[in-house]
Amino acid sequence: MEDSGAEKLMNTLISKMESMDNDVKLLKAENEALRSMMQNPNAMLRKAGFVPYSTPYSEDVEGDAFRSDMGTGIMKADNNNENLDSFSNEQIHEMTWDEIHEMASQHREVKEMY
Image 1 (cartoon, rainbow, N blue to C red):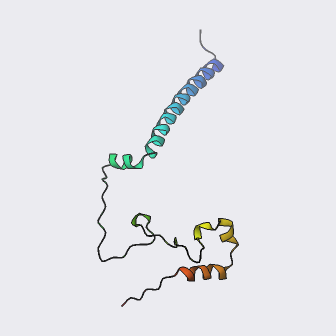
Image 2: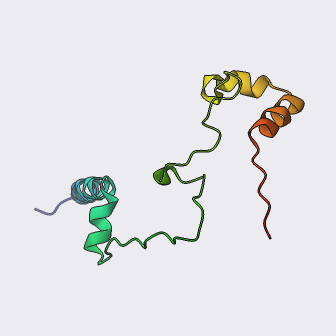
């Protein structure tokens, strides 16, 4: 007996859905593997052949206040018993520009370069 057109169509659709389901499962597995790789970028870079390297600091260069690893921090010291960390984000956003300039001028260190 020959399959009718409807039966052929149904079988084709079922086989196509099965292959799509297998493809989706494969993509999900690949996606999970990529997610696990992204959790540890150092391992991914090592796998790509990169090696960690850092150059020593120059002796004649002053410390960079923006680097937290050098022990220098911008505006972390107390001034007039007022610590900048004591302000909340809301308080900072409610400040006027005059107050912000006043706070910056209190922490400014002027260096002369010749």
